[in-house]
Structures are given as C-alpha cells and as structure tokens.
Image 1: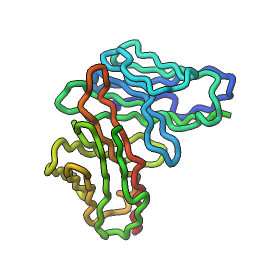
Image 2: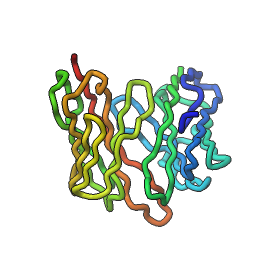
Image 3: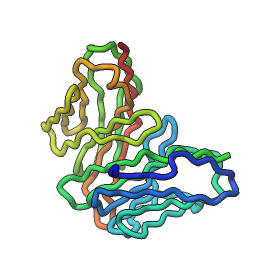
Image 4: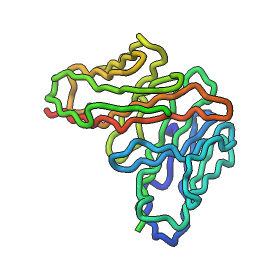
Length: 114
Length: 114
C-alpha cells in the first residue's frame, strides 16, 4: 500500500451536489493536512489536524467541511461548491514533534465543479 | 508572515546542461526547508529536507544547499526524465497553538530536452 492514498482521483460535480473526498495514510503519522492547488498559485493550506484535533483553518469557506475520525483517515466534505473551487485537492501527513518533519502527499483529487 | 519565492518560474535545458533553481525565503524561525518534485496531475514527491545553513544533500543528479536566506537545487547533467515542477517549502518552529504547516513557493517548471 502506498503511503498516502486519496480517493477518488477525479470528481466532477454540480454546484448543488454533496460529495466527499477521502484520504488514508499508512505511515503512522499523527498529523494530516488538506491543501488546494490551483493553476499559477502556490499550494494553499486549508486545514490541519494534529493528533486528531483541528489546529488550523485558513479562512476556508464553510462549503468545505473537514472530518478526521482517527489519525489515519481524513475527509473533506463538499457542498454547494462554486466553479472557482475547481482545483487539485491534496492530502498530506507528517509526524508532529518528530525528528523528521517532512510531509508526504497523496496523488490528489482533481475536482471540477460545473 | 512566512514567504517563499522561487526563480525562475520556468527553465528549459538541453540534456546534460547543468543549472540551478533558486528558493528565497523569509521565516520567523526556520525549522526546515523542503524540496519536492511534482509531475503533472500528481501529488508532490518528497526530495530533501535541510535544517541549517551550510547543510547539503544529494540524490542522483540533484543537490540541495541552504543558506540563511535561500536554498539552491543544483541539477547536474539533467536527463529528460528530470522534467517536472520543483517546489520549495519552509516550516517554521511551531508557536503555541500553531501547527507544523508548510508554506510553499509557486515552483519552477523544468523542461529537459533530449
């Protein structure tokens, strides 16, 4: 199994739909992240969960709702999205307070809002 | 506010033509500087972590160096398979209540022609 797995890889949804993105990490890490990647922009941090507690929420609209049921799983619930929300959504994990603090990323979910 | 600036935005090289990518940063207290490689439509792949000025790390044709204000990713005798976007990110020492988030630059898109 790869380190960080995201599903689905591609998603097309209408503005009135409700969908969820799923992320699972097999690295034994204790922190998980959601990033948004749009063309010509740096990766934008959306949410951080450390030890299953949300520790950061970067002014993300409420139409994005994260959920972290345990240290290995992370969800991003989507509802009433806008076309400008179309992007690559990346999940990552890392070890907080560890010697090695690098984050490992999943392959991303390419989201298109129509 | 932590910031990362990468240059150039895009770089075209001939196979075997060595060059360097630059990452300039400002951060309140550097815990680590990270280099990632990203192929189109995929998640970033971890390459290196540098923790202190003067540190160097190597992997195949890549060598990363760090000073107090910038990092360089040197590519020696590149091959077409080195074509990708290279991302630089910094991590600050976590303040109370904060997270170990990464702040990314926009990346350098490298194309190596055969």
